[in-house]
Each structure stands twice: as structure tokens, then as C-alpha cells.
Amino acid sequence: MVVIADGRFELPERYLYSSQHVFLDTKKKIAGLDQIGYAYLSNPTEFKVLVEEKVQMNEPIAVITTDRGITTLYSPCAGKIKTINQDPLKNMELDTYTKGFILEFESISEIDPTLITGDKIEPWANHEVKTLLKNEYSFKVIEIGDSAAGKTAIKVRFTDDYFKQDLKTTLGVDFGSKELKCEYIADDTLFAGVYHFNAKLNVWDAAGQAHFEKIRGMYYRDAKGALLCFDVNNPVSFKNLDTWVDELDENVGRKVPVLLVGNKIDLERRVKAKDAEDYAEKRGFIGYVECSAKTGIGIQEAFMKLALAIYKYEEGLS
Picture 1 (tube, helix red, strand yellow):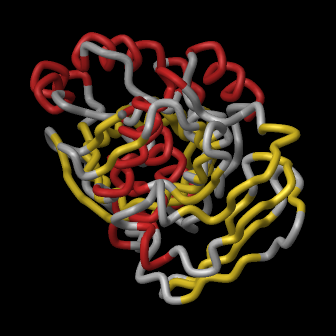
Picture 2 (cartoon, rainbow, N blue to C red):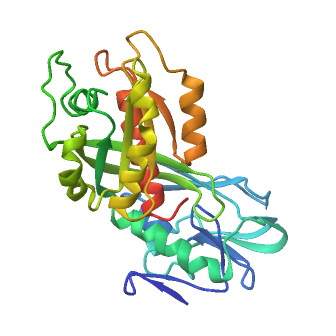
């Protein structure tokens, strides 16, 4: 028996599990919703079976109505049905694997090869429970790049949604935060599914002038990700990116997601987008986004992209 969350959830090791927590007991020939899957349901009120005598693999077998909407369950196998449990909800929580089953099969002709089995059950279940119990995250993000690349304007546009033409040059570090409602769609066999979470991004805007280099180091500590910014109107700010990457690596001490951001696309372009894309790929960044702090274009996209990348990295999904 795989025991998760100090005994709150139990998953029999010999069972097979789909990514949406439908279990299959090939010995007893029964299928149903496992304990974690039941916990994901929010106040289930109605259950309806969609099949009768036979079922195909991945065919919808039942729908469950909750206060969040309707959840559809899919068959982990193909086979001939022997018994249908018309009201499993009352037993799903306490007698999940006995009285809480949905279908009992007379025979099983095919089993979904993507079902989670053996030593993969525990890491998958631990991740699922962690997602279930915790969907609030706080990530420290640092903005780096040359002075006048528009880092402060990017931060202010993101956190306060306004633009000021004559923002003062940052002295040391500036700070702001904002919470994002995120949705991550995983297509990995082990962790497939849609994950909703809130991410509070604490954005540290580091001064870009060379004489602040010594004090900048302390602000990198505990950073979970970085926005590496340059001005598409200023080729020098693009040429200096290597220096900033070296400083980031030296002070953070571990690999973190980095997003390359080309700002001021509302002005005349002097750095080609293709050059920036190639640089981001060469450096192993999570991507390249162009934006304008003045108009707001691309700002939300940049921070959302970084938040999702940090989430994946911190949760071991990439």
C-alpha cells in the first residue's frame, strides 16, 4: 500500500491508475475513482453512469456534478461490464476500493498502456497531493540588465499597470509584487492534467549601473527566476547580456529559469528579434518575449511565462 500525506490517502500498489485518478484492479476486475481523485472533487452532488454492457478504452464512463461543474471520468480499459454501481459517491471516501467502485467487469480485453503502475505510483501520488493541498506560491523574481533598459517601467507596468515617462533611475534595488492566477497544462504521462495555482511574484528590480555591482549581489539571494532585459533600440544593452548572465550565475549559485525580454518595441528597432531568439536558445533560457512598458504589450505574457516556468522547475515537472 502506498501511503501519502501521513496516512490521509492510500493507494494499493497492485492497482493501475490513470492521470485523472481512475483506478483499475485487474484481479477483482473493478474500476473507480481513487482517494486522491475523490478529494479533488468539490462537494459532489450527482453521479451518472454513461455506459451499459460494454466499454471501450478511454470511453467516458461517468459524469460527476460538483459545485465547480461537471467532471467526466474515462475508462482505463476495454471490456464487458458485469456490475454497475449506480451510487458510489456515498462510499467513495471511506470504502473507496470496495463499495466505492464504479464498474465491475466480467472480462477485460485491453488495458490503457499509459496507466501509472509500480514504483511510479508514489512519486506521482505525492505530486498530486502536493498540488491538491497547496496551490499558493510565492516566487522571488529578479530583473537584471543595463541601466535605462526599462526594467523599472516593466515592473511598474506589471504591478501597478501604469507608465510614467520620467521614472527615476533605480538606486540599489526597487521592489514590487503582484499575484497571478495561473493554469499549467501538463501532457507528461506521469503528471498529465490541468493544474491551477496562484503565484505571487515578488519582483526585485536591480540597479543596472556598474558602480552598484557590489551591492547587487545580495539581492540575488533566493531568487527563483530572472527577467533578463534589454532595449531593442539600444544594441549595446543587447551586447552586454553575457555580463549579466555571468553575474546571475555567480550570485544565485544554481540554475533558475531565465526569460529574455526585449523592451521598448514601441520605438525604432535596432536589435533583430531573430538575434534575440537565437541568443535565448543558445543560452538555454525558457524563451524570448518582446514588450513595451509604455503600451503594456507583452508585459503580462512575460511574467506569466516566467511564473509557469518557475512552477514547473520547483515542482520537478521539467
